[in-house]
Length: 297
Image (cartoon, rainbow, N blue to C red; front, top):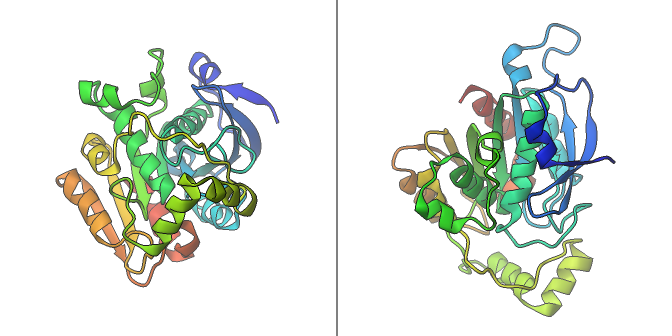
């Protein structure tokens, strides 16, 4: 795999959209290597390409302990590719990416690298779709990379976003958060209490590393990153879709409702009957509807 830095994306001219799938390594602004996969849109294969589909790319942000190669992520990519080009990647500490997971904090830099790659491939419209932890990341990314430069937003940046185009070339044109939390440190369900044990305890991090193939950073957040509910009002004017299952065992329905309320009319809410949590629970029908919304929004 070739290693390509984000800075090279910003300095290069826009190239033609790649005709075939490719796997590469991206470099984040804090110097980590992130594995990523690009797949072209399959709409109109063998005929003239749909100009809307050719223009759009969907970047998938997986959940905690996921990766670009997990079956549920590959299934989502396959469905999305029927409507637009797709980029999948593994967050830091997951799969073949470097570093350790910060469980939603610096992962915003991983997503920014993937979005910048999509634009370097010629896609003028980029939509981020995040699941669970990835849902919280797309919300923060949408706030930090599309909102005007306000003092409140600047104070919450995990690292300084480069002045040479980080905000303009790594922004999302629309945001979809599936099964996302509204607030940090939530322990109101048994699955979330187990997750906190994995993240905060030495023994739990060993289980994460060898049981779930996820390397977790032992440091506490400092400062605490912008929460999802506080990020949501900063995403406008980009369209925002919140998707949540009414059988989600991790986050009850007050989470998506809090997010939509915080958007003050700037978000659409889909409550999915019988759906569980994140990419593993998203069936093909829901994924197709998300892809259609992403292209049309």
